[in-house]
Image (cartoon, rainbow, N blue to C red; front, side, top):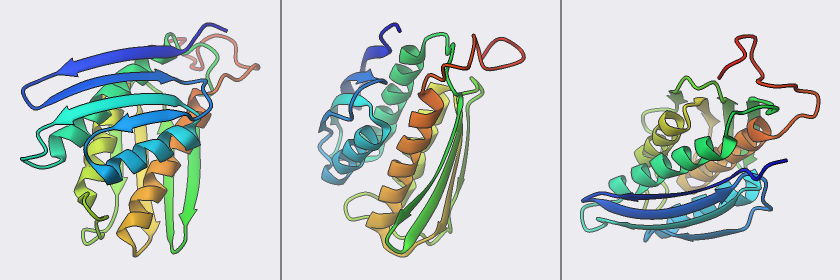
Length: 196
């Protein structure tokens, strides 16, 4: 099987990002974004997706964390799309329910080449320390748009902001891991259109 890896760089007036990913890794990661909680979430994302992920992001944290988190999601999405190549032989779909103590999240993914994020959580969902909950949605939107994936995230219930963010990131990783996996029974592109 050909290597499913990619390296990406992105430099704007707001962020500078260097990233590499291996979709068929073992979950090893080196993450440095300047936002400790986001580093923790990306480490979990790599471990539960079994993606080898290296990310260095330098952003305008003197403003806030928005550009850092959104732009990192953009580059992860771009890199994953590149690493998937033609998508021949992949499962394409993935889903996962992730319990985290009192929290339960559901994430469903279709690597359809049709970007869409459906993100459902109560308006008063608590934030994790040092990372507003709205930025979890922004990360997911940036990832979906640049991976060109259909991603549905639903917080079924939860009270602790840390647990809620963690359940979503882990659930996203597990669903993507399933969708990206090679299925030996799939021949060619997993679509009757024969294109994704």
